[in-house]
Picture 1 (cartoon, rainbow, N blue to C red):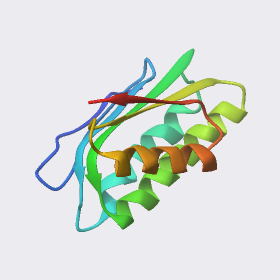
Picture 2: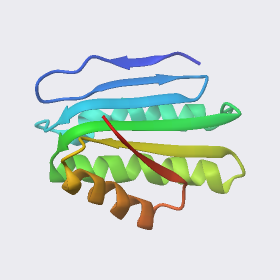
Picture 3: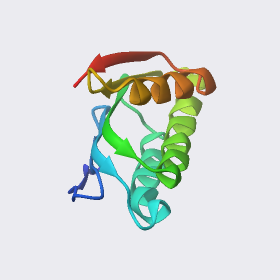
Length: 123
C-alpha cells in the first residue's frame, strides 16, 4: 500500500495517510470542489480497509472548513467508522485552536454522529 500525500495550499489542506494507520488532514479546507479534493483520500481508505494497521488514528487538524468540506469529512469518518464496526481499532483526534470553541463543537457534533472514540486537543 502506498503513502497518500497531497500538499496543502491556502485553500486546501495537506493530506497524509500512511499504511501504518497514521492519517492526517491539516490546514484550511475551502476548495472549489471538495469532492475532487477528498476523492483520493476516500479511495485510499477503501484500499486500506482491506488490510488495515492494528490501530488507525485519524488526526483532524483543520483550522477552518466550509460546508462542502464538512460533507466530505463526514464521508471519511463514516468509512472509518465502518472499519471500526468490523472490529478494527480506529480513533479520531480532533484538534482545534484553544479559543475556537466553534471548531471544538463541530468535532463534538461529528462524535455524536460517528460511533468512534474522539479525543480533543489544542493545536
